[in-house]
Length: 156
Length: 265
Image (tube, rainbow over all chains, first blue to last red; front, side, top):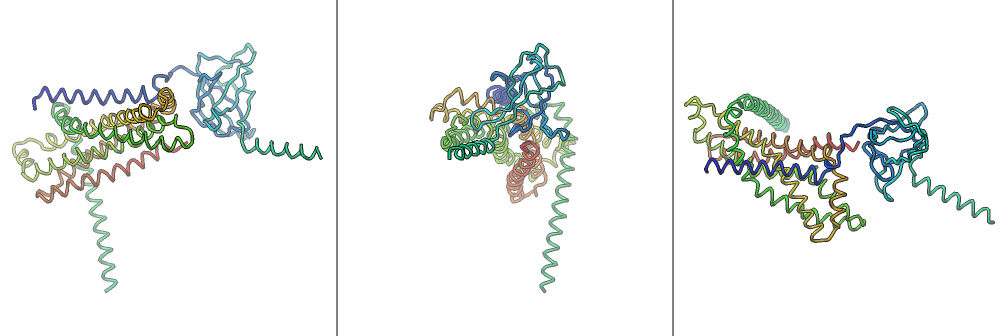
């Protein structure tokens, strides 16, 4: 085998391998939409977070504005404490409401933010006070059955 | 009599254990020696380039064809199952995640072990059997630096590239079957895939896996070749051992790496 041909083939092979990695990163993965934007940290306390996981998206009006950085349990108030990383270029007012929502009927859970009317903005390490817990299907069904039963009782 | 036979088998277990530990230690010292004598490869990279051609480029055909077919079969089977739950739009997620996380690194490494690993072992074993390695030493050429190290590093370099090509071809195969043949919507196929596959969590972990497999397979291949008894039977036994040991090592390492990387936390 000629030296030049061998080098050519090895060069092609290495380029093909790196090209495959780039395709995996850009086309298959989400490197293209990956933002290295600076973030600020906001905490939110929920009575029940349902199936929320770390790295779940934080959305406002359906647009991803940040990620859930960590979830812990606060034994002082017995609530779930969720740490949110929100991108610096999305400021939110101090009275923003956070709720645990579900994408689709049985999809992944995410945090939805709805901004309020306050002119003060959330700063780093601030806490969101207006929160709404995840909808637990069992509780919902229980409530429904309970209300149906009491309705039936009232009629008689 | 019964006691005697028990003692014999216990002795057998002991001998096997000592032998296994001794061989592991020998293989580790051999690895240290190979890495320590890699200076020649850095000074003469052409030695490694030549071996990358034989281990990497010549494995391309089997890697590309297998990747394509594995992806296409995943497309068919995944669709069959997903359509039952009305979620055939997640076909891209299923194909890409199973390839990038598991099948890409593992199947590419198994193919690499049987295609390139066995060839390395047979070549080095035959060089030893025909006393070429001894002749090199007579000429003051270090066989470990000149023969073993370039093959070892060529395997370490080729494996991640081959695994990446395998995964990319597999995703393309899944696309061919899912979108072109069955008719899953192209937009949801790619967008669901992109939102589900994380570059650091999935793609990078797959690359790390393939690097570890490349290291293990190359190590086993050069060691078995160097350690082969210098007979025709010995070389054939060493070649078989390379394929069997590397396959088991790949599956074992894969379990350990997966347990560390994807604990579901």
